[in-house]
Length: 225
Image 1 (cartoon, rainbow, N blue to C red):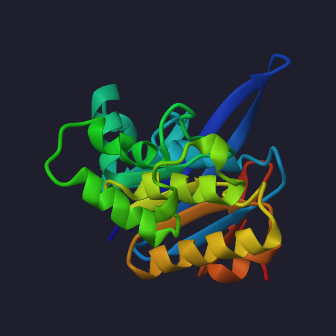
Image 2: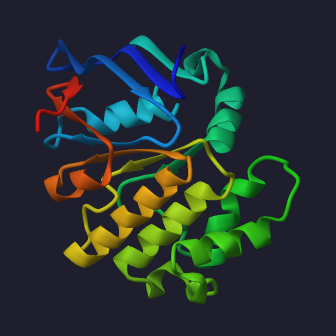
């Protein structure tokens, strides 16, 4: 029986200087509901490429990505966009909020990309309270600290109640205290049943998750403690 998200022999090939190389080389991974999985590795090891294929943002050159048993890269562009909006919350690396929108409006954006029923405003306020920045709903990104912007990005990623939250280096530019706060937030999200998959180079964050993998030159393997 398949997990929530499955990578099967996943590959991404690029060419450099006329020679082919695999940024991701036959990666296999299974993510279950409630998992909190960390993937560690040096810069350039293929972590972000792997995440982007898992989120449906980048097509693999080999292997498959299955979500709830469906090969997502067999979908057309419109279908995969709807799938990603409905099922996956994505927190990209760095600052990703739209500068001319308030925090509240940034959180609501994914809700309105596709027609859906429900109370977007009510859910946005609940999520802002959940991540601890409801008092900043009317603020603009330029008025926020790095940690506050990351919390807003997490709330935005959760607005459509995704089955999995995927985050790329979510604490890479944060101080030690804020890093711990963000990691505790991810742990709480996983404990509520939403799977969490992150890539990081910070070994201090690994204790928050339940599984850890290492990425090295495109090769993914269980982390040896």
